Image (cartoon, rainbow, N blue to C red; front, top):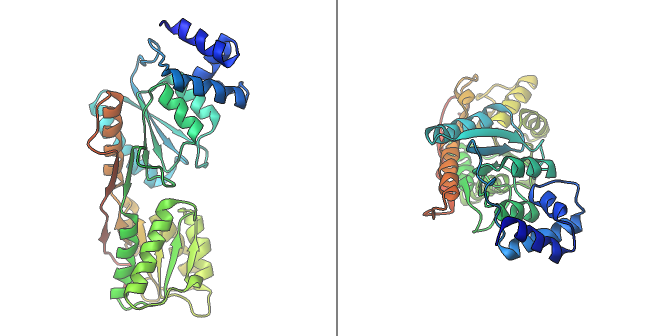
Length: 330
């Protein structure tokens, strides 16, 4: 069956024109949602695959962030870039503007570019977006999923629960019992897992979990600063804080300075990620090392395999984390 005949058949069954089907195939936004859903369903049902223009003239991979900023993003870019450059593939960066799911305009641009595949960082696709990519045979891999993406979605993550427990056990080994916890956004899976690891470490060492010592930030400096001020102004303030990211730990440093607290003399601080800046702040930050470059590199290799229709040995990987002890804890 030719491409034109296939489009015509889809248009006939959907009760729309051929140009309307073409708009949906190219991700155009100017199609009614109910019409788009009906056409997408028929595309899936017929197993329609666009040929010819589906192969990009210049092979590329889209690396998509919810927010493209800071050293955290740079570590992931370095990891992915090393792999794709060696494969002769171009890396294209884009962001979702702070949203956890890409906007329709992003899907439209991806379908027009027709990359070899897409790496989603700390962001999820809704079912319709996923169906649009799958119908065009554009594979995708999720790095550090926001939620539980399911066993059939290729994803690369790390052992967040272990990291939360490691950080808290380190502080417990130093004698701390009043340990504050600043997680990331409460709706994100990695944040909840780190908090769960923290609470498990407390309970397993005989310390009751105090809800007043648990707060949630945004993984950014501002969130760490804001939540640290609240914790450090408690009448029975914590003697240690586990910040759910290195950037939040910087916010804790600023809050402690403003309140005249010495780190680590008055307050021990543990971060998460082990970004390059962790060893250059004063005092050098004790943190959980998350292998960000390796996570991105594995995601790129997995995506290249999927783009070549190879069957990967595993669709979901969770990498180990470890503790980097420096001068911010005592």
